[in-house]
Length: 437
Ligand code: ATP
Image 1: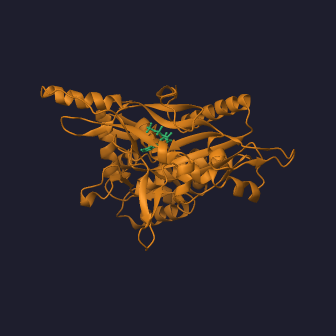
Image 2: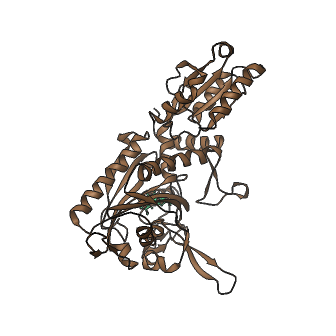
Image 3: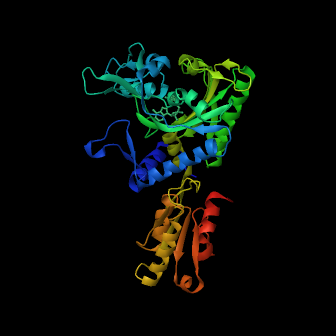
């Protein structure tokens, strides 16, 4: 394991760029602050995170269904939800150099003051002002164009579809609606790589319950633990996670109470995911209620929400998986999250019989799994290259394979090799990656 310093962040950023996980957005035009693009490996990795989340929150459960709402909604939604007034961060301006930063980010303030102190300059700040984070867009061909917003959180798309979901499916309270999608915030100070971006993806569950204090508490506790368990099940070390209970000052305008799951990152303990008790805030603001089909009782349900960032999850999974073994760099990602589940090599690229057999294995496997092909350089270099991107298994076709119909499978974490029959290879890899099906 390596020590978590900012040096580690430099290594992660450089690995992401070099191997095609994450690139600076619009880089050939000098980039755009707060925007990032996912490359060939990043898109697979991120999709695996989202698939695992969907599996655990929707597919494996009886009580949760999905939703995929439009990013741009009627602007009335954002007025009713309170975001036009309250999706704000406190902004202060340095009176010496006029840089604007978030007043509630103590580290940023201290760093800035230290910079001036080095130059023997005194710093004073303007009074904090509320800065709204919603991103405005303008629609239509006639002037004045209609003002709308890119959604600042994905929750509202679920809330406005509550009644449609109840009437079109068999859900009954308690039940949840899950959604994954992009959100946009005009963050004052984006930074720490993808941690704070202006465009990012969220994965959220809105879980609807009867308005009842006791039930609210127990459902909140259940989801809090369930979400922590999910991160641990996919490889984040438990000691790198903790809960942080929001103080009233930290709480969002809609939350009755809230806790964050935080990660011990190279830049401090940081929020991964928020678990919020939203009470009846949302549905009552949109004047939506629920009629119990069994009792006929009508009421405004309460919501317990779990709201995680896909990009933050990707970043923290990468940081937690990064390790160095001598000069070998190994990304010990959970195999379910790894961009490629296996890589296939012919021992020698200039032996057509080896290439032909390896190619056949590769083509058979890729019908079922994301698999890489590599016939460059020597085997050692190919292992090194796959370790760096987290590929859990490397399969080599050698001369013995032609006789014995078997291959060498090398394990990323132990570097141990075993012979596996070609006929059993797919089942072997699937079991090792996903466990017993
Ligand atoms: P922060 O305090 O870090 O600004 P927040 O409390 O405003 O975050 P929420 O509104 O609770 O965040 O959003 C839920 C989740 O969405 C966060 O836990 C995080 O994973 C993700 N998220 C929020 N803002 C950003 C952002 N600017 N960039 C990347 N992910 C974000």
